[in-house]
Length: 361
Ligand SMILES: [Zn+2]
Ligand SMILES: [Zn+2]
Image (cartoon, rainbow, N blue to C red; front, side, top):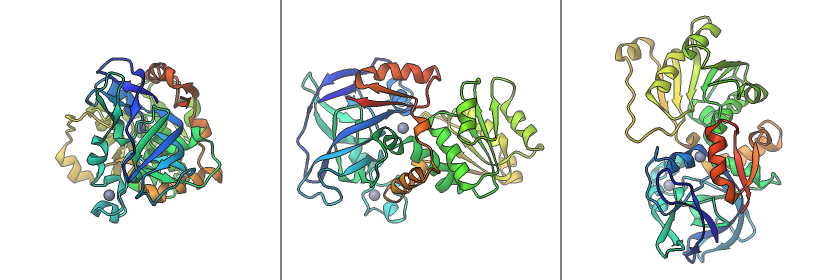
């Protein structure tokens, strides 16, 4: 099986022919139809999120079930599935509380070895998936069956970016009709937040990014205003657009730096809510004025995987797409081959793409 392997910080991913292990009784083997290249993959490659080498990267994928273990009941051979980068075991306390994005089985699933590399050493897979590969062997709790004819290149995006972003708006923040919203960062996840805010009926959606590259796509997805953060303080620009009040909901969707979080907090109106959607550095810290927190009574929320209950939300986002209310086709900038995954990281760093999607393995 061909797979793209993380071999060390700063190194290009290596395409290797690896030997997958036989699936266990509760495992599912999936043939990938498509895999998105997400910023979190790049964060591992460049060391922003430290991980051990010897890992198949990729965590945003969809495909077809090839084989199931003897105890698997949730899916069967031939089913179309979207991979969930956080497993949903269905029986832990968070899962039972409709918070499968906080499932207790996450670490156990992530640590599983899934076969051997060309040098004979065992490999792990990113978040227990490893979608940069022809096939992946995963826990049954990591896949969700969906009923749809939407092509795999779009379905794959529901596995990470779309669920994280749309979920941030609909689940985490619960944006209300008529709300005002600002989104810092217009990559795949940021544009998904934007679409979630549009679906929720926000009256004003201010998209913010550095430079003009994202203005067109943000406007096409429903942004009412676009702020170029290189043209002066973005907080002041958002204040100017909202009569000095700030907005009801701010979503920080860059990489969670203290500067970006301070900007998000500054744009939030009194009594409003800011949501950190990005995956920040593990050692990151964020300082705010405690007096201001008291005085302006703002809410600060974390957001992991769009607070999604994947067995409810994946099909929900499929349905929103099929009825034309969620646009996934515009999120796919390029179709690429597995061998071009390193080029896709370059394109992402140069802000040329919303998503490169691997459709040929
Ligand atoms: Zn991702
Ligand atoms: Zn669970």
